[in-house]
Length: 165
Image 1: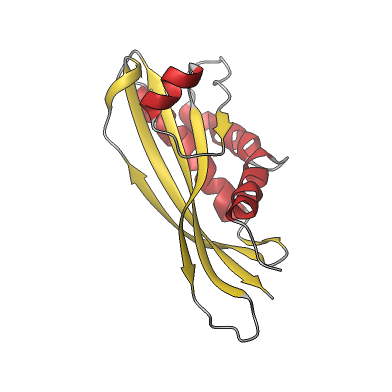
Image 2: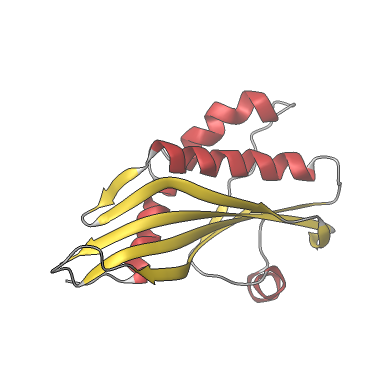
């Protein structure tokens, strides 16, 4: 049986939404990032790649937003007698918005570190034939106009090895 890109994206989504996922990581990092007592906003999770401007017009987005999508598939037929053997890159894009610049980057890095923590803790077999690697790539964009006056985004690209017979 082959795999679908949706299956790989859903596996990463389950890791983020699971019991030991994003909520647990955010709670563990709270002391390092949160200066006041109020609970940080929960992130909206979207399974698609939609530019911020289109998402705001279509749905009226509530920030922070996490988007999970597949952006690259590499076939590497290293295992014989497999229908597919290769690497799938899944991206978790984090976008935060606010009316003040001073706390925007802190909020972004708070969620960025939480997603990184989930990836690092859950490396290994995530489903039959799907293996989350410990390697990942992070890209942080500069602040720009958008959202609630200012918008900043970061992307974490994770590699999932797929071996299906």
